[in-house]
Amino acid sequence: MYTSSQLLDKINKFIAGLDYKRPPVGLYEPVEYTLALGGKRIRPVLMLMAYNIYKVEVDDALPAAAAIETYHNYTLLHDDLMDKADLRRGNPTVHKKWDENTATLSGDTMLVLAYKLMTQCPAPCLKTVMDIFNETALEIGEGQQYDMEFETRNNVTEEEYLEMIRLKTSVLLAASMQIGAVQAGASPEDARRLYDFGLQLGLAFQLQDDYLDVYGDPAVFGKKVGGDILCNKKTYMLINALQRADKEQRAELDRWIAATEYNPEEKVRAVTALYDAIGIKELCHRKIESYFHAAEECLAKVSVPEERKQELRNFALSLMGRKV
Image 1 (tube, rainbow, N blue to C red):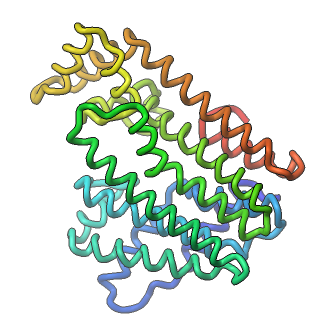
Image 2 (image 1 turned 120 degrees about the vertical axis):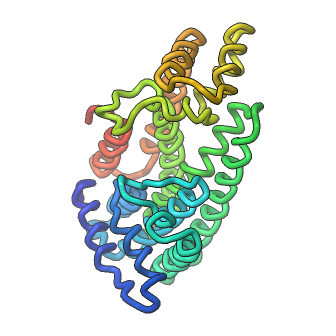
């Protein structure tokens, strides 16, 4: 069995070895730039871990793992373009380093390259893999559309938000694991259990991101807290605060949301205090725990010896910032 760090090293080397030195340079240079920015590579590592549960050597799964990472980065490139973001992983985004047209076209090219890599799966499982990949790609687009629509809505429900993050974030983690299992010859039941594990873990992971943006330690979280509050992002925290606030609390929340001139630190402090008073911190923490517990239950049902699942269990714990 490989450790997650060993699998990360394998996927990094494989992606670094992909040859995109072909004309026109202006199309492929942003692709190489984007993939070279690195990141945690959570999705390809999860794919390889699911594969490794059933097969000792994972090299045959590397093209599909690279496909997932290429696809993920394509979505980030286009997200940055739509959000007009200046930085990604501390570096200029593609539309800032080049221009918007280049970002659009290079992103489209990354999508094609992702499919090209995924079709390198062994023939016996290719149709199953591509069906999973196609459905997942559609769902991610649906999630992004919901996310955009939520920006102009003030009546987003908790159920709508959870469905949006399932589509936008969780399904790719889930599909990564299912595709890894399918390639390794797992039973359809086990492949689905690993999909469900990834889905529940993805929901817990995204909600924890919401939680840490308000209550995290900046030194650990890696960025200032309160960013979601400052931009009035429709997170699990804000949606539930709006639904559960009393009349006075709702009026104060509405005032901060509508404010165009304010001291950022004061707004973060005031909204966080409202969250505390309404009980949002505890509510979100319980929801995270419920999803993580559900993920653990899905993994427990995977029909391989417990010791073969331990590294995956440890990786899930580390993703959630828990002791292994």
